[in-house]
Image 1: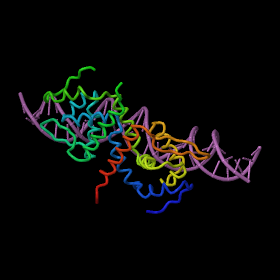
Image 2: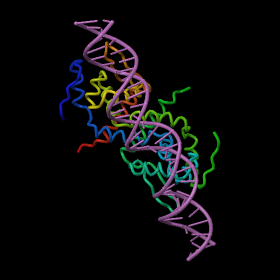
Image 3: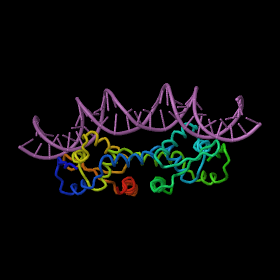
Image 4: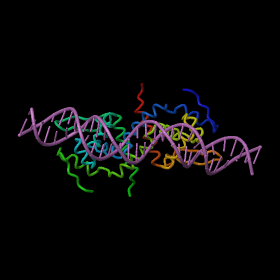
Length: 120
Length: 120
DNA sequence: TGAACATTTAAACATTTATTTAATTGTTTG
DNA sequence: CAAACAATTAAATAAATGTTTAAATGTTCA
Protein backbone atom coordinates (compact mmCIF):
# COMPACT_ATOMS: atom_id res chain seq x y z
CA UNK A 1 0.00 0.00 0.00
CA UNK A 2 1.36 3.38 -1.01
CA UNK A 3 2.10 5.84 1.74
CA UNK A 4 -0.01 8.96 1.70
CA UNK A 5 1.31 12.28 2.97
CA UNK A 6 -1.12 14.23 5.09
CA UNK A 7 -1.57 17.92 4.26
CA UNK A 8 -1.69 18.71 7.96
CA UNK A 9 0.20 17.17 10.82
CA UNK A 10 -2.05 16.57 13.80
CA UNK A 11 0.14 14.05 15.52
CA UNK A 12 0.82 10.43 14.80
CA UNK A 13 -2.65 9.19 15.79
CA UNK A 14 -3.87 8.88 12.23
CA UNK A 15 -0.85 6.88 11.03
CA UNK A 16 -1.80 3.86 13.09
CA UNK A 17 -5.38 4.17 11.90
CA UNK A 18 -4.39 4.38 8.25
CA UNK A 19 -2.48 1.14 8.63
CA UNK A 20 -5.77 -0.61 9.31
CA UNK A 21 -7.95 1.42 6.96
CA UNK A 22 -9.87 -1.07 4.80
CA UNK A 23 -9.11 -0.91 1.10
CA UNK A 24 -11.47 0.95 -1.16
CA UNK A 25 -12.69 -2.23 -2.86
CA UNK A 26 -13.42 -3.86 0.47
CA UNK A 27 -15.47 -0.86 1.54
CA UNK A 28 -17.43 -1.04 -1.69
CA UNK A 29 -18.17 -4.69 -1.00
CA UNK A 30 -19.38 -4.06 2.53
CA UNK A 31 -21.37 -1.02 1.40
CA UNK A 32 -23.01 -3.27 -1.17
CA UNK A 33 -24.43 -5.35 1.67
CA UNK A 34 -25.81 -2.31 3.45
CA UNK A 35 -27.25 -1.10 0.16
CA UNK A 36 -29.46 -4.18 0.15
CA UNK A 37 -31.25 -2.90 3.23
CA UNK A 38 -31.05 0.80 2.42
CA UNK A 39 -34.46 0.89 0.79
CA UNK A 40 -37.56 0.89 2.96
CA UNK A 41 -39.56 -1.49 0.78
CA UNK A 42 -36.72 -3.97 0.45
CA UNK A 43 -35.90 -3.83 4.15
CA UNK A 44 -39.52 -4.52 5.00
CA UNK A 45 -39.62 -7.50 2.63
CA UNK A 46 -36.44 -8.83 4.15
CA UNK A 47 -37.82 -8.37 7.63
CA UNK A 48 -40.79 -10.50 6.65
CA UNK A 49 -38.59 -13.21 5.18
CA UNK A 50 -36.51 -13.22 8.35
CA UNK A 51 -39.59 -14.44 10.14
CA UNK A 52 -41.39 -16.69 7.67
CA UNK A 53 -41.28 -18.30 4.27
CA UNK A 54 -43.82 -16.95 1.82
CA UNK A 55 -44.80 -16.85 -1.84
CA UNK A 56 -44.58 -13.75 -4.00
CA UNK A 57 -48.31 -13.03 -4.07
CA UNK A 58 -48.57 -13.07 -0.31
CA UNK A 59 -45.47 -10.97 0.14
CA UNK A 60 -46.87 -8.42 -2.29
CA UNK A 61 -50.21 -8.40 -0.48
CA UNK A 62 -48.52 -7.97 2.91
CA UNK A 63 -46.44 -5.10 1.57
CA UNK A 64 -49.36 -3.62 -0.34
CA UNK A 65 -47.11 -3.46 -3.37
CA UNK A 66 -47.42 -4.71 -6.95
CA UNK A 67 -46.11 -8.16 -7.81
CA UNK A 68 -43.47 -6.87 -10.24
CA UNK A 69 -42.14 -4.38 -7.72
CA UNK A 70 -41.81 -7.11 -5.11
CA UNK A 71 -40.30 -9.48 -7.64
CA UNK A 72 -37.70 -6.87 -8.44
CA UNK A 73 -36.60 -6.59 -4.83
CA UNK A 74 -36.66 -10.34 -4.35
CA UNK A 75 -34.35 -10.72 -7.30
CA UNK A 76 -31.87 -8.28 -5.83
CA UNK A 77 -31.95 -10.02 -2.46
CA UNK A 78 -31.67 -13.48 -4.00
CA UNK A 79 -28.78 -12.52 -6.27
CA UNK A 80 -26.94 -11.24 -3.23
CA UNK A 81 -27.37 -14.58 -1.50
CA UNK A 82 -29.33 -13.09 1.37
CA UNK A 83 -32.49 -15.03 0.56
CA UNK A 84 -33.23 -18.30 -1.21
CA UNK A 85 -36.17 -19.45 -3.29
CA UNK A 86 -37.90 -22.71 -4.06
CA UNK A 87 -40.72 -23.44 -6.43
CA UNK A 88 -43.71 -25.49 -5.29
CA UNK A 89 -46.22 -25.86 -8.08
CA UNK A 90 -47.15 -22.50 -9.47
CA UNK A 91 -45.77 -20.62 -6.54
CA UNK A 92 -42.24 -19.58 -5.63
CA UNK A 93 -41.40 -19.35 -1.96
CA UNK A 94 -38.74 -17.12 -0.53
CA UNK A 95 -37.03 -17.13 2.84
CA UNK A 96 -33.86 -15.93 4.51
CA UNK A 97 -30.75 -17.86 3.48
CA UNK A 98 -29.12 -20.08 6.07
CA UNK A 99 -25.74 -18.37 6.02
CA UNK A 100 -23.58 -16.45 8.45
CA UNK A 101 -23.95 -13.32 6.38
CA UNK A 102 -27.75 -13.53 6.36
CA UNK A 103 -27.79 -14.01 10.11
CA UNK A 104 -25.50 -11.04 10.53
CA UNK A 105 -27.70 -8.83 8.39
CA UNK A 106 -30.74 -10.10 10.25
CA UNK A 107 -29.17 -9.16 13.58
CA UNK A 108 -28.10 -5.76 12.30
CA UNK A 109 -31.67 -5.05 11.21
CA UNK A 110 -33.19 -6.09 14.51
CA UNK A 111 -30.79 -3.92 16.44
CA UNK A 112 -31.40 -0.95 14.20
CA UNK A 113 -35.16 -1.27 14.48
CA UNK A 114 -34.88 -1.08 18.22
CA UNK A 115 -32.70 2.00 18.24
CA UNK A 116 -34.66 3.90 15.63
CA UNK A 117 -37.88 3.24 17.51
CA UNK A 118 -37.33 4.21 21.15
CA UNK A 119 -40.10 3.50 23.65
CA UNK A 120 -42.42 6.41 23.10
CA UNK B 1 -53.80 -1.31 11.35
CA UNK B 2 -56.01 -2.60 8.54
CA UNK B 3 -56.24 -6.32 8.10
CA UNK B 4 -54.86 -7.62 4.82
CA UNK B 5 -56.26 -10.69 3.13
CA UNK B 6 -53.66 -13.04 1.72
CA UNK B 7 -54.21 -14.28 -1.84
CA UNK B 8 -53.01 -17.73 -0.80
CA UNK B 9 -53.52 -19.57 2.42
CA UNK B 10 -50.35 -21.30 3.57
CA UNK B 11 -51.34 -21.75 7.16
CA UNK B 12 -51.51 -19.33 10.01
CA UNK B 13 -47.75 -18.81 10.35
CA UNK B 14 -47.76 -15.49 8.53
CA UNK B 15 -50.56 -14.00 10.62
CA UNK B 16 -48.44 -13.86 13.76
CA UNK B 17 -45.60 -12.38 11.75
CA UNK B 18 -47.77 -9.69 10.21
CA UNK B 19 -48.82 -8.60 13.69
CA UNK B 20 -45.22 -7.59 14.35
CA UNK B 21 -44.37 -6.34 10.86
CA UNK B 22 -42.85 -2.87 11.26
CA UNK B 23 -44.81 -0.06 9.67
CA UNK B 24 -43.73 1.23 6.32
CA UNK B 25 -42.58 4.57 7.73
CA UNK B 26 -40.50 2.86 10.38
CA UNK B 27 -38.80 0.77 7.72
CA UNK B 28 -38.03 3.88 5.72
CA UNK B 29 -36.44 5.41 8.80
CA UNK B 30 -34.28 2.41 9.52
CA UNK B 31 -33.36 2.07 5.84
CA UNK B 32 -32.27 5.69 5.96
CA UNK B 33 -29.63 4.77 8.51
CA UNK B 34 -28.33 1.92 6.39
CA UNK B 35 -28.31 4.24 3.39
CA UNK B 36 -25.70 6.31 5.17
CA UNK B 37 -23.24 3.42 4.95
CA UNK B 38 -24.42 2.05 1.62
CA UNK B 39 -21.81 3.96 -0.36
CA UNK B 40 -18.21 2.74 -0.38
CA UNK B 41 -16.65 6.19 -0.10
CA UNK B 42 -18.91 7.27 2.72
CA UNK B 43 -18.49 4.02 4.59
CA UNK B 44 -14.72 4.35 4.37
CA UNK B 45 -14.85 7.92 5.65
CA UNK B 46 -17.04 6.83 8.52
CA UNK B 47 -14.69 3.96 9.30
CA UNK B 48 -11.87 6.47 9.60
CA UNK B 49 -13.89 8.74 11.87
CA UNK B 50 -14.74 5.75 14.04
CA UNK B 51 -11.07 5.53 14.86
CA UNK B 52 -9.80 9.10 14.95
CA UNK B 53 -10.73 12.73 14.71
CA UNK B 54 -9.45 14.47 11.61
CA UNK B 55 -9.76 17.58 9.48
CA UNK B 56 -11.28 17.64 6.01
CA UNK B 57 -7.99 17.99 4.15
CA UNK B 58 -6.49 14.98 5.85
CA UNK B 59 -9.60 12.91 5.37
CA UNK B 60 -9.60 13.78 1.69
CA UNK B 61 -5.92 12.89 1.39
CA UNK B 62 -6.45 9.59 3.18
CA UNK B 63 -9.37 8.75 0.91
CA UNK B 64 -7.58 10.05 -2.18
CA UNK B 65 -10.68 12.04 -2.96
CA UNK B 66 -11.34 15.70 -3.70
CA UNK B 67 -12.18 18.04 -0.84
CA UNK B 68 -15.69 18.85 -2.14
CA UNK B 69 -16.54 15.18 -2.56
CA UNK B 70 -15.46 14.47 1.00
CA UNK B 71 -17.23 17.56 2.28
CA UNK B 72 -20.42 16.36 0.64
CA UNK B 73 -20.29 13.03 2.44
CA UNK B 74 -19.35 14.65 5.73
CA UNK B 75 -22.38 16.87 5.43
CA UNK B 76 -24.67 13.88 4.96
CA UNK B 77 -23.15 12.07 7.92
CA UNK B 78 -23.26 15.15 10.13
CA UNK B 79 -26.85 15.97 9.25
CA UNK B 80 -27.81 12.44 10.24
CA UNK B 81 -26.19 12.91 13.63
CA UNK B 82 -23.71 10.09 13.11
CA UNK B 83 -20.70 12.40 13.25
CA UNK B 84 -19.98 15.76 14.85
CA UNK B 85 -17.72 18.62 13.84
CA UNK B 86 -15.78 21.34 15.59
CA UNK B 87 -13.80 24.17 14.13
CA UNK B 88 -10.29 24.91 15.32
CA UNK B 89 -8.83 27.85 13.47
CA UNK B 90 -9.08 27.34 9.76
CA UNK B 91 -9.73 23.66 10.05
CA UNK B 92 -12.88 21.71 10.80
CA UNK B 93 -12.48 18.44 12.63
CA UNK B 94 -14.89 15.56 12.36
CA UNK B 95 -15.36 12.49 14.50
CA UNK B 96 -17.96 9.90 15.38
CA UNK B 97 -20.81 11.21 17.52
CA UNK B 98 -21.04 9.97 21.08
CA UNK B 99 -24.51 8.48 20.78
CA UNK B 100 -26.06 5.06 21.06
CA UNK B 101 -27.00 5.13 17.41
CA UNK B 102 -23.46 5.95 16.30
CA UNK B 103 -22.09 3.13 18.41
CA UNK B 104 -24.63 0.77 16.94
CA UNK B 105 -23.72 1.73 13.40
CA UNK B 106 -20.06 1.45 14.30
CA UNK B 107 -20.58 -2.08 15.59
CA UNK B 108 -22.63 -3.07 12.55
CA UNK B 109 -19.81 -1.90 10.28
CA UNK B 110 -17.12 -3.76 12.18
CA UNK B 111 -19.11 -6.96 12.10
CA UNK B 112 -19.85 -6.61 8.41
CA UNK B 113 -16.22 -5.98 7.55
CA UNK B 114 -15.27 -9.21 9.22
CA UNK B 115 -17.87 -11.26 7.44
CA UNK B 116 -17.33 -9.79 4.01
CA UNK B 117 -13.61 -10.40 4.25
CA UNK B 118 -13.12 -14.04 5.26
CA UNK B 119 -9.61 -15.27 5.99
CA UNK B 120 -8.30 -16.01 2.53
C1' DT C 1 -6.50 45.26 5.35
C1' DG C 2 -5.26 41.84 2.19
C1' DA C 3 -3.17 37.55 0.94
C1' DA C 4 -3.20 32.64 1.87
C1' DC C 5 -5.34 28.72 3.46
C1' DA C 6 -9.44 25.49 4.72
C1' DT C 7 -13.93 24.37 3.91
C1' DT C 8 -18.38 24.67 1.98
C1' DT C 9 -21.72 25.64 -1.59
C1' DA C 10 -23.57 25.79 -6.40
C1' DA C 11 -24.27 24.19 -10.86
C1' DA C 12 -23.85 20.57 -14.08
C1' DC C 13 -23.51 15.91 -15.31
C1' DA C 14 -23.65 10.97 -15.64
C1' DT C 15 -25.47 6.87 -13.12
C1' DT C 16 -28.22 4.34 -10.59
C1' DT C 17 -32.60 3.01 -8.85
C1' DA C 18 -37.60 2.05 -7.59
C1' DT C 19 -41.92 1.73 -9.68
C1' DT C 20 -45.60 1.19 -13.27
C1' DT C 21 -47.68 -1.01 -17.20
C1' DA C 22 -47.56 -4.51 -20.53
C1' DA C 23 -45.88 -8.65 -22.29
C1' DT C 24 -43.78 -13.25 -21.43
C1' DT C 25 -42.50 -17.52 -19.21
C1' DG C 26 -43.61 -21.42 -16.42
C1' DT C 27 -46.90 -24.58 -14.04
C1' DT C 28 -51.23 -26.86 -13.10
C1' DT C 29 -55.48 -28.79 -14.23
C1' DG C 30 -59.86 -29.20 -16.68
C1' DC D 1 -54.24 -28.94 -25.64
C1' DA D 2 -56.17 -24.84 -23.74
C1' DA D 3 -57.47 -21.96 -20.02
C1' DA D 4 -56.18 -20.08 -15.59
C1' DC D 5 -52.95 -18.80 -12.41
C1' DA D 6 -48.17 -17.37 -10.49
C1' DA D 7 -44.08 -15.18 -11.28
C1' DT D 8 -40.69 -12.89 -13.98
C1' DT D 9 -38.99 -9.84 -17.55
C1' DA D 10 -38.95 -5.69 -20.54
C1' DA D 11 -39.59 -1.03 -21.58
C1' DA D 12 -40.38 3.46 -19.91
C1' DT D 13 -40.26 6.97 -16.52
C1' DA D 14 -39.31 9.84 -12.63
C1' DA D 15 -36.37 10.62 -8.84
C1' DA D 16 -32.20 10.30 -6.24
C1' DT D 17 -27.20 10.18 -5.91
C1' DG D 18 -21.97 10.75 -6.23
C1' DT D 19 -18.53 13.40 -8.41
C1' DT D 20 -16.35 17.32 -10.85
C1' DT D 21 -15.29 22.11 -11.64
C1' DA D 22 -15.82 26.70 -10.26
C1' DA D 23 -17.21 30.10 -7.10
C1' DA D 24 -18.07 31.64 -2.38
C1' DT D 25 -17.47 31.73 2.62
C1' DG D 26 -14.84 31.74 6.78
C1' DT D 27 -10.44 32.09 9.37
C1' DT D 28 -5.66 33.36 10.28
C1' DC D 29 -1.76 36.15 10.16
C1' DA D 30 1.69 39.22 8.11
